[in-house]
Length: 372
Image (tube, rainbow, N blue to C red; front, side):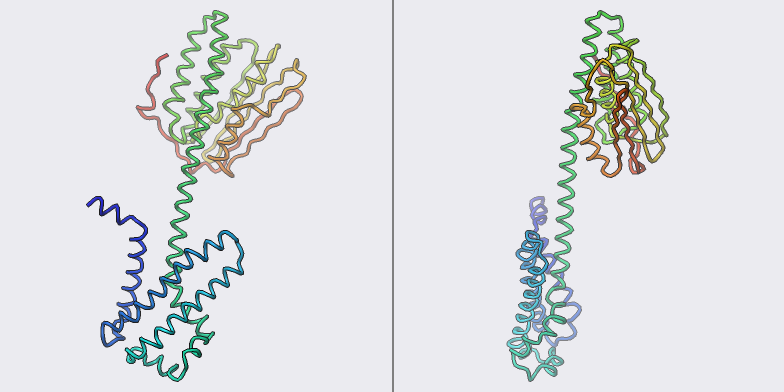
């Protein structure tokens, strides 16, 4: 039974079911116009046969040719040619077979065209291009529409799969990048034999817990990302101490969600370029504001005055990674602006129209502790 069910999913059975339904509709709606069953079967069986021929010439030849060339004139010429071919076949079937065999059913047609020759009836262009195409193209048009809709679904599914694969690759690229930078921080504390090393490891544990267990969903509550940012800032304060002055001001609305780890990279960029190379006191000002529908995130860091040239706009792996994620997750919904002056570097991210993203409450599974 399962094998039989799977076999019915093949496209050939879908097409057979479609044309069987078309024929059944013709038979049911026209049964009373015929004196015998073989008459209605012969008439509409031949009509459906011509429709099948025209439909698959469109699907297999005409439309693929148009998709490759994108030229309208060959498409129009092809449609007119198929209309004339279908008209010719139907006219010949009526002239040689159906009208002589079932004169009662075709009495109106015989009254109008009974004295016409076959050539006259075939080259009746008004009938060929304005009346006959309804009989020739109508079911095929429905089939082409269904095929186009199915094709668009397949394309959309492939795009989503590709998008998910790209996002997964970007996240796997970003996490090691973040871990590498954080381990460097711990290494610096260990070299100094700082009493804060254990505290830093605990902070790192919390950060890794967030990354490993709470970032599997496409969107997470913004308040969780705030907690991640605060933990990261605590780590950097332990590392740099009085060398950096950090101010983090945030106010977020309840229920707002964001793609995980987006904002963290901007802080990493600020510390990498604004603090690590500064011999004096560096400054980092962070502002995060959100309503139900938008998020505004701003990071301003001082530029080391002892450096002749600081190229912070490139941002290395992390910033480029985030740019790609923004294009995938928030197309036409984000504005990322970067401004660099002699004394400061400002990065601002704005996300708009976020009502479609609902917050995901953390589950018991997402709150598992990680042991270092």
